[in-house]
Length: 187
Image (tube, rainbow, N blue to C red; front, side):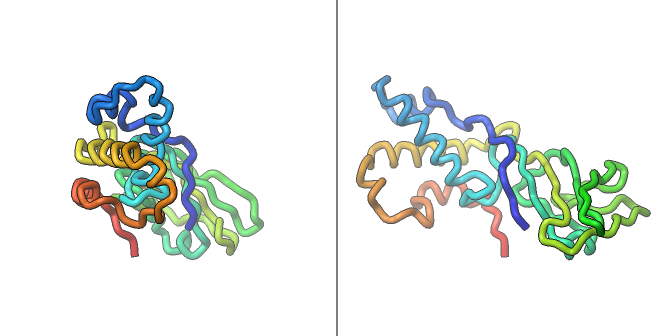
Protein backbone atom coordinates (compact mmCIF):
# COMPACT_ATOMS: atom_id res chain seq x y z
CA UNK A 1 0.00 0.00 0.00
CA UNK A 2 1.18 3.48 -0.85
CA UNK A 3 -0.44 6.74 0.17
CA UNK A 4 0.13 10.12 -1.40
CA UNK A 5 -1.37 13.52 -0.85
CA UNK A 6 -3.37 14.81 -3.83
CA UNK A 7 -4.76 18.03 -2.35
CA UNK A 8 -3.11 19.43 0.78
CA UNK A 9 -5.18 20.81 3.64
CA UNK A 10 -5.63 24.51 4.23
CA UNK A 11 -3.43 25.89 7.02
CA UNK A 12 -4.63 24.74 10.42
CA UNK A 13 -3.35 27.81 12.23
CA UNK A 14 -2.61 31.24 10.83
CA UNK A 15 0.47 33.40 11.11
CA UNK A 16 -1.58 35.92 13.10
CA UNK A 17 -2.70 33.24 15.59
CA UNK A 18 0.85 31.99 16.09
CA UNK A 19 2.27 35.48 16.45
CA UNK A 20 -0.39 36.37 19.01
CA UNK A 21 0.11 33.14 20.97
CA UNK A 22 3.92 33.38 20.93
CA UNK A 23 4.03 37.19 21.27
CA UNK A 24 6.15 37.56 18.13
CA UNK A 25 5.74 41.17 17.10
CA UNK A 26 8.18 41.43 14.20
CA UNK A 27 6.51 41.60 10.77
CA UNK A 28 9.86 40.74 9.18
CA UNK A 29 9.49 37.17 10.48
CA UNK A 30 6.07 36.47 8.90
CA UNK A 31 7.53 34.32 6.10
CA UNK A 32 9.61 32.36 8.62
CA UNK A 33 6.59 31.79 10.88
CA UNK A 34 4.52 30.69 7.88
CA UNK A 35 7.21 28.18 6.91
CA UNK A 36 7.40 26.87 10.46
CA UNK A 37 3.60 26.43 10.50
CA UNK A 38 3.81 24.35 7.32
CA UNK A 39 6.67 22.27 8.75
CA UNK A 40 4.95 21.68 12.10
CA UNK A 41 1.68 20.75 10.41
CA UNK A 42 3.41 18.31 8.05
CA UNK A 43 5.33 16.81 10.95
CA UNK A 44 2.04 15.91 12.66
CA UNK A 45 -0.43 15.56 9.76
CA UNK A 46 -1.08 12.73 7.30
CA UNK A 47 0.21 11.10 5.20
CA UNK A 48 3.67 11.19 6.78
CA UNK A 49 2.82 12.77 10.12
CA UNK A 50 3.45 11.50 13.62
CA UNK A 51 -0.24 11.41 14.60
CA UNK A 52 -1.26 9.00 11.82
CA UNK A 53 -4.44 10.96 11.21
CA UNK A 54 -5.63 13.53 8.68
CA UNK A 55 -5.98 16.86 10.44
CA UNK A 56 -7.27 19.43 7.95
CA UNK A 57 -9.54 18.36 5.10
CA UNK A 58 -7.34 16.87 2.38
CA UNK A 59 -7.52 14.50 -0.57
CA UNK A 60 -5.41 11.35 -0.43
CA UNK A 61 -4.75 8.54 -2.89
CA UNK A 62 -4.07 5.05 -1.62
CA UNK A 63 -2.96 2.16 -3.83
CA UNK A 64 -3.64 -1.48 -3.04
CA UNK A 65 -2.19 -4.74 -4.27
CA UNK A 66 -4.25 -7.50 -5.83
CA UNK A 67 -4.39 -9.46 -2.55
CA UNK A 68 -6.16 -6.63 -0.68
CA UNK A 69 -8.61 -6.21 -3.54
CA UNK A 70 -9.41 -9.94 -3.62
CA UNK A 71 -10.08 -9.94 0.14
CA UNK A 72 -12.84 -7.43 -0.55
CA UNK A 73 -11.77 -4.93 2.10
CA UNK A 74 -9.66 -1.86 1.38
CA UNK A 75 -8.71 -0.14 4.66
CA UNK A 76 -8.41 3.62 4.22
CA UNK A 77 -5.76 5.16 6.44
CA UNK A 78 -5.68 8.54 8.13
CA UNK A 79 -9.12 9.08 9.64
CA UNK A 80 -11.53 10.70 9.88
CA UNK A 81 -12.63 9.48 6.44
CA UNK A 82 -15.06 11.99 4.92
CA UNK A 83 -15.83 10.75 1.44
CA UNK A 84 -14.60 8.48 -1.34
CA UNK A 85 -13.97 10.44 -4.53
CA UNK A 86 -13.18 7.55 -6.89
CA UNK A 87 -12.15 3.91 -7.05
CA UNK A 88 -10.03 2.57 -9.92
CA UNK A 89 -8.76 -0.93 -10.69
CA UNK A 90 -6.62 -2.65 -13.31
CA UNK A 91 -8.34 -5.62 -14.92
CA UNK A 92 -6.62 -8.91 -15.74
CA UNK A 93 -5.30 -7.32 -18.96
CA UNK A 94 -3.79 -4.36 -17.08
CA UNK A 95 -6.34 -1.80 -18.31
CA UNK A 96 -7.55 0.75 -15.77
CA UNK A 97 -11.28 1.09 -15.09
CA UNK A 98 -13.45 3.11 -12.71
CA UNK A 99 -15.42 1.03 -10.23
CA UNK A 100 -19.05 2.14 -10.25
CA UNK A 101 -20.23 3.87 -7.07
CA UNK A 102 -23.02 1.28 -6.73
CA UNK A 103 -20.35 -1.45 -6.39
CA UNK A 104 -18.90 -0.35 -3.07
CA UNK A 105 -19.75 1.21 0.27
CA UNK A 106 -17.78 2.78 3.07
CA UNK A 107 -17.90 0.63 6.20
CA UNK A 108 -16.19 2.52 9.00
CA UNK A 109 -12.74 3.25 7.63
CA UNK A 110 -12.77 0.60 4.90
CA UNK A 111 -14.14 0.27 1.42
CA UNK A 112 -16.08 -2.98 0.94
CA UNK A 113 -18.23 -4.41 -1.87
CA UNK A 114 -21.89 -3.41 -1.77
CA UNK A 115 -24.11 -6.24 -0.54
CA UNK A 116 -24.61 -8.77 -3.33
CA UNK A 117 -21.80 -7.33 -5.49
CA UNK A 118 -18.54 -9.06 -6.40
CA UNK A 119 -15.65 -6.90 -7.49
CA UNK A 120 -14.04 -7.72 -10.86
CA UNK A 121 -10.81 -9.67 -11.16
CA UNK A 122 -7.65 -7.60 -11.16
CA UNK A 123 -4.16 -7.99 -12.53
CA UNK A 124 -1.70 -9.37 -9.98
CA UNK A 125 0.38 -6.27 -9.25
CA UNK A 126 1.16 -4.01 -6.27
CA UNK A 127 -0.95 -1.18 -7.69
CA UNK A 128 -3.96 -3.22 -8.81
CA UNK A 129 -6.39 -0.70 -7.29
CA UNK A 130 -6.33 2.88 -6.14
CA UNK A 131 -8.78 4.87 -4.09
CA UNK A 132 -8.95 8.65 -4.01
CA UNK A 133 -10.65 9.90 -0.86
CA UNK A 134 -11.08 12.87 1.42
CA UNK A 135 -10.12 12.77 5.06
CA UNK A 136 -9.72 15.27 7.87
CA UNK A 137 -11.65 17.45 10.28
CA UNK A 138 -13.89 20.39 9.37
CA UNK A 139 -12.73 21.91 12.65
CA UNK A 140 -9.36 20.65 13.84
CA UNK A 141 -9.46 19.80 17.58
CA UNK A 142 -8.06 22.61 19.72
CA UNK A 143 -5.36 20.45 21.39
CA UNK A 144 -3.91 19.70 17.95
CA UNK A 145 -3.97 23.37 16.94
CA UNK A 146 -2.20 24.23 20.21
CA UNK A 147 0.41 21.50 19.58
CA UNK A 148 1.20 23.01 16.17
CA UNK A 149 1.63 26.45 17.74
CA UNK A 150 3.89 24.95 20.43
CA UNK A 151 6.12 23.33 17.81
CA UNK A 152 6.33 26.58 15.86
CA UNK A 153 7.24 28.47 19.05
CA UNK A 154 9.94 25.95 19.96
CA UNK A 155 11.46 25.97 16.49
CA UNK A 156 11.26 29.76 16.24
CA UNK A 157 13.07 30.27 19.56
CA UNK A 158 15.58 27.45 18.93
CA UNK A 159 16.62 28.92 15.62
CA UNK A 160 19.80 27.51 14.19
CA UNK A 161 20.33 25.07 17.04
CA UNK A 162 17.18 23.21 15.95
CA UNK A 163 18.38 23.09 12.35
CA UNK A 164 21.64 21.35 13.27
CA UNK A 165 20.30 19.12 16.03
CA UNK A 166 19.40 15.44 15.68
CA UNK A 167 16.07 15.06 13.84
CA UNK A 168 13.06 14.57 16.10
CA UNK A 169 11.68 11.05 16.25
CA UNK A 170 9.22 12.00 18.98
CA UNK A 171 7.61 15.35 19.66
CA UNK A 172 8.38 17.32 22.82
CA UNK A 173 6.50 15.99 25.88
CA UNK A 174 3.86 18.75 25.97
CA UNK A 175 3.08 18.33 22.26
CA UNK A 176 2.89 14.56 22.66
CA UNK A 177 0.54 14.88 25.62
CA UNK A 178 -1.78 17.15 23.64
CA UNK A 179 -2.00 14.97 20.52
CA UNK A 180 -1.77 11.50 22.08
CA UNK A 181 -5.58 11.03 22.28
CA UNK A 182 -5.76 11.58 18.51
CA UNK A 183 -2.85 9.34 17.55
CA UNK A 184 -3.50 6.30 15.36
CA UNK A 185 -0.90 3.53 15.60
CA UNK A 186 -0.57 0.97 12.82
CA UNK A 187 1.03 -2.43 13.17
